[in-house]
Image (cartoon, rainbow, N blue to C red; front, side, top):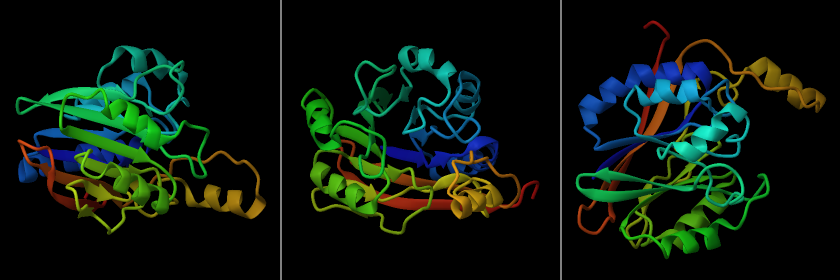
Length: 261
């Protein structure tokens, strides 16, 4: 089973990058399913139903989310009704949505879990214990986890805790692709951060001047998605054994290109 997972999609430029690169990646790598993190896909904060449909139309089968999942209230009903979108499972069970979604891939059942970290992040339940609770109820060895977290230490420790149970643990949130992809000793694929899709010369997809003023003044200035070129699209390609669900390989993908080029 081959999974293509796309890193944080940041606003319209991120969606443009995906629209540009997906046909090439689909033809070259022939993934059996395409997943993505969509929590920044609408204006850099959150997702809307319209943006979700735009991205579904590109061939993305399902989305994980993160700490910006609540930023666009119009998505709340869709989180409850659409089985293709997962918000962090360790957020309150009283909040909209679900943390685990399922897909049929090559006659196998793939569980996709969205999870949030706790270090330097908003209040969430323990991701370690939450995974234990979810895993005890799963009936498939094919388990893909997006760990939306700030620090590499928390991500690495979490992946070690899931090693041998999850097929893959991929990190999102920091928007910078890391070079530590590997197969852990018990067969779990791991990377600290998949990276982002958006404007490459930016502050994690946001306008550099606005970000600079925020750092210089300490004021809560609202960040804005930047415009410009080149665009970058980041992802990972993961191959799983079709019997055991264990990871066979993980490969970083990154494509940069000029807008209109």
